[in-house]
Length: 370
Image 1 (spheres, rainbow, N blue to C red):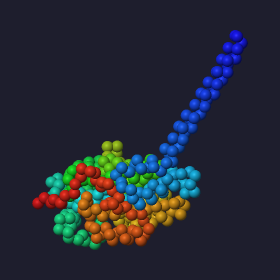
Image 2 (image 1 turned 120 degrees about the horizontal axis):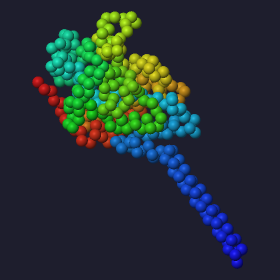
Image 3 (image 1 turned 60 degrees about the vertical axis):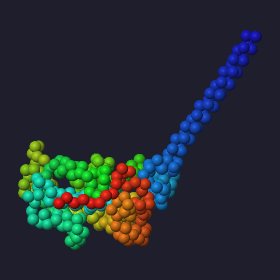
Image 4 (image 1 turned 90 degrees about the vertical axis):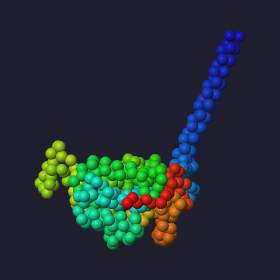
């Protein structure tokens, strides 16, 4: 009897151990399968895009990212080569209130800022007035105004330390955005496009903001917008240390108590082919993804698409929504036709965005104080 009990207990113990091992194995299979599904299931990427409607552009982007981040795909791109470039104005920051942020800023500094308006040189004042006439009266800007603005901006902010200029930009960004209710200039970002930046970051992409705007303006906006200030390429202005004066920087050594200040030198407008040259110099790799909205971004897109090493894609955003933004529909239609002919993916603000600036922002008429 005693011998039978031992044998019975041993058999029961072995049976219980098999059941336990089977349970553990099944549990591991379920967990690993769930984890694998979380990583590879394309539907997971939908959680990033709460501000988007289902659309061709979004499907193309998700298909691209799923493909190039899949180690088993022949189009797999190593993380260190997943470089994405973004234009800023009109691509993920508004440019229609009523013109570019940096143009609005110069107009304010030269014509309205009591601390500077009486000190502005005549050519700088003329440039600011041309911006005012453009936004208020629709008077066309002179040819090559981007260069004229660059030279005027260099003088208007000359002598400001980088910290002072950063604070100046941020203070202006807190002003109500002209043409909108419920939004400041600094909040004037396209929420769906910011979701793309976060999506790419989470999938191992490194992104750079490659803007025609002042590099230091773009950096000042970085925190509020939500991108990294050290990933900015933009229009460049001269710098010097605060006691350097006219001394050659190769012959001068700054003291510990000196600050870096802006000089009156305008170096380079970061538009069109200059974007490509700047990307080549500052990144050192050809991008695989590119996002923009205008002819100033086409060279950057084509540079990306010239990357024969990897699968690439370029996206153009079209400002075709005159209900939620101050769009020029005729101009939007021309741009869309041009970008489709160039085989860029088209993002339609009107059709693809659930919201542009957020659900509580309302388009209103522009207001110009006397």
